Image (cartoon, rainbow, N blue to C red; front, side, top):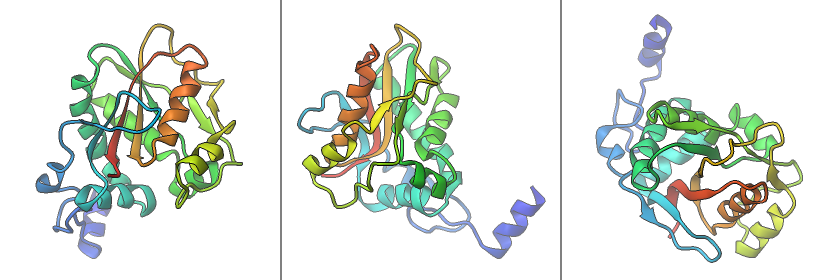
Length: 208
């Protein structure tokens, strides 16, 4: 605790959304992650996002995902937890969308798995199962269109044999950004291939 206070004195903490001092994610910016809104993408149903991928929400996602702001996992997870009951009530399995192994190593782990665990902390009937994996042959999807993203994931995003969701409990896939919907669709198909009912995809943000 003392070292944390000393670090704040040397490098003052600032809000990832608006750079307000003294807080990782301020109350004002937290309001940008609002009630879930349906996201429409070809081949994808029951998908929702808390905000458009712009402004404070976009800056928070990037700060957490690419700039080492791991303290944001807790508020981002709480935002998903607040939204999830309006999509699915009762017991649910939270399945984090996986990152490429190289990306996960550079970020200190699977970033959405951490957010999913923080989400489950606020939902007594939710459990986290890392039921999907993305192998190292998948390329970085930045700049790829919908068809290229789908081709990039084909045969590379698969069920994780070490972590199988319990039978009869619906799953909600958690992701940071829905762009073309290719990742969400591939995650859904992979889970359904092993008999898992996918209730919804819930993302922090979605592109317009």
